[in-house]
Length: 450
Image (cartoon, rainbow, N blue to C red; front, side, top):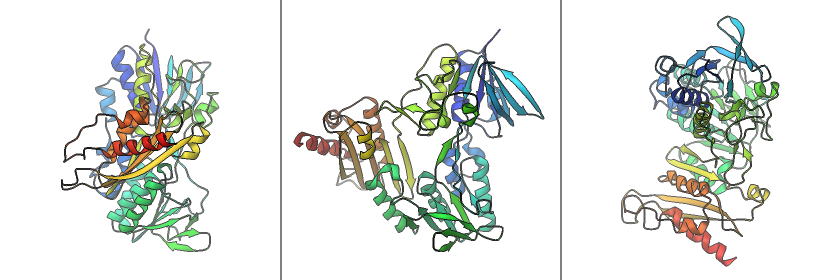
């Protein structure tokens, strides 16, 4: 009798695990329950669908539901919601297809993802007020913009979603106002990145309202204004993008332990406090490569990688899910901004480090070769050990250079070792001293003097 591997959730982590488990052990019965109809889709592409750069929402689907069923032999059941888990009985309770039933499992993966945070704003139920965290929401935003052609747009939140949707709605002809309650946009990227991005957003016509808290929305059925503490501004569409929270209630109700972040606590193989119950993706914690402590940074690669590893483990060949550095990159009109590791010095001190940082600006190509641009690089290290802790980059070209820093973090590289890295050089691609090397050289010198 073959084992049964049940997966709760049909996006990145869930479908990666299901595919890998079935591929490694075709005799395993793999059942995936997904409460919606969309599976294995690229949420990161949704702003570009709204912008009009992606023609069809279906283009964001990596593998269709039918392909999973027919080509990968996965028992994928969309429109089925798992409403309960009993780890002692090793069953899940499922609602779908007009019935409620119990499904036994031998191994279980909780891959329930995350949901957009909805602040306690007045008027969230007005037409034209959206979050944008799943495919149906993205489709609804695109339909609304197409039908209404809003002249003014309010975006609440200056994170990834806010920045990307500012670009998307500007491209659709709206006068965009972005509201951020903190002093800067892209807070996890640090001030050096934020200041460059903010200047560029203003150049692109985005009206920034920093240190500004929104209290809600007003309108007669549809949104007409965004309300602040002492005033209001016109808004014919509003996007609320203030972050996401892990969908961990199902796990918690079953006695599956959560970590301090509020996401499901897991070990290096993605196991929870129940040996045959795993968790991965946006609902789960992962270990941070710099601090060695659990963290929650919901990103696509983390979910795909952890799901694939768990699928292999379930098939009988244990594979660690891997550590994370929180590496992220975002497009802000003509700029790219990226980060990895720990770039907040206060957080570094809380983790037991004595941080030292530098910020430099350097060209992305040889000075005589056309087409280059200035790239601002910030690196952070521990003063005593010289261990690299994190970094950021921002500029019109070269933001993917953050991957060099992320690789160095994964390897436990010191600043001196990074400074001496043998990176490639040719005038169309880099100066002799790549901007990352230049930043490492300057930071290494600062460590030597102190």
